[in-house]
Image (cartoon, rainbow, N blue to C red; front, side, top):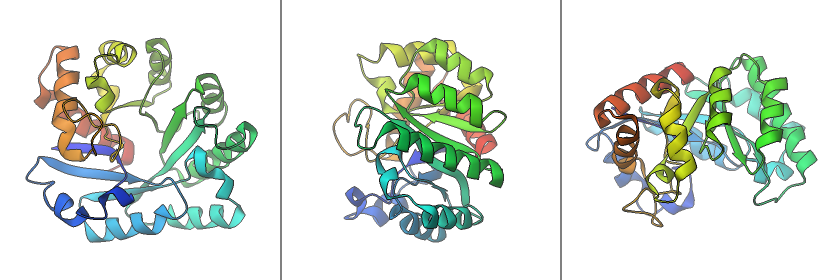
Length: 253
């Protein structure tokens, strides 16, 4: 079944129909979802979702745009939550120089701190990196060697993707691969092994064609699997099967 390795069902965009939508997942072919943390406030909602739905697991971390709110008390709570049974990764963590909401040095400081905590807990990491290719690669080489990781919502070159694959990491692919102008990502999918690709939505964001611009959900992942299958010269079933296996391997499920 489909494994959505990165979603945000804790987001307010789902407040009106969350229960109904999540209740439709199994019938829609979605077997497992990882809900990724982005703010300190998101953590309690994620814990609640993991307790309520057997197929939802969580990741705990602070997104680079939100690290201004992080402090030692937050890190202590993160350490405690990473020990919970259904919390399977630290994330999403990383660097974002596109929105530039936080000073780059502050982003780097908390990215490294969260990576170090994940290493200490022997947890995989979910990496957010936007317009910060070189700095992300440097930090991953220095602080995440030998760790399990996914470069979420991958947006860089095929060459860099291959380097990440050599480091043992996964590449997260979502709705963007269905966009006509997504030449770089299509090239990445063509050039890296299917064994290193993960299906993800980043919902409520980044809905695939034909729903581009609308609220996204895991039920749209068949469109992403089809697009990957076409690029790889295989079937959507094979993509779904292999990416599920990859997701289970990354998150230890």
